[in-house]
Length: 258
Image (tube, rainbow, N blue to C red; front, side, top):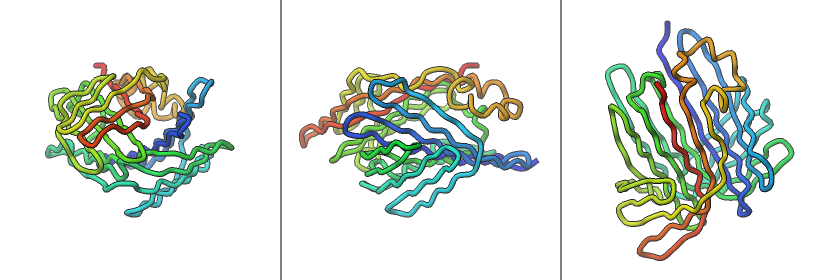
């Protein structure tokens, strides 16, 4: 039947003006199947956010300093230049599999193209490797987000369920996560104030990121497609002992509906 392996890339960019592009690329091996897919979300001032998803191969070249992406079917290409050190963590592990979170670029300088639109700004890149199927994860609620400015970066993960864990990464160093809400994130030595922002996407995965890949509907359990996400883009202000730093926040809440 073959073991389950899913490698999922997440990369984004927000310009100074607040235009945003988010790219997901995933490579799945399971039950003798090998499938690749990608999805891109665009958010531009004065326009409704839109998501496009496509099955098909992509190319990613990753070094310590740079990630280069090409996804021909989505007409997406870009370069992420690292601005701070990476952090890797095994988020969950059991006998049958694990989840390894690799925050390759907590902060990036990005140049990317989506169709005929160019995005130049600060961004973020991570890679998630799962050897345990998504619908079997001991999780019910996830709050995730990232803040990036010219000077600082902050990423947080608050995972709640039968297995719970929470942590943060600030400027490439792991720190304790004290609390996280839609308006504020508090870590050991700093806090992030999040302004009310723009909704980027809301709904079940079956109607959002997976809507463009109906062929997957017959392959996975229905519970996977019932996962509900809410994603926002907001301005953020990081306050620490050194002062304040202003940047953009992309954050989300994900619920596993049984």
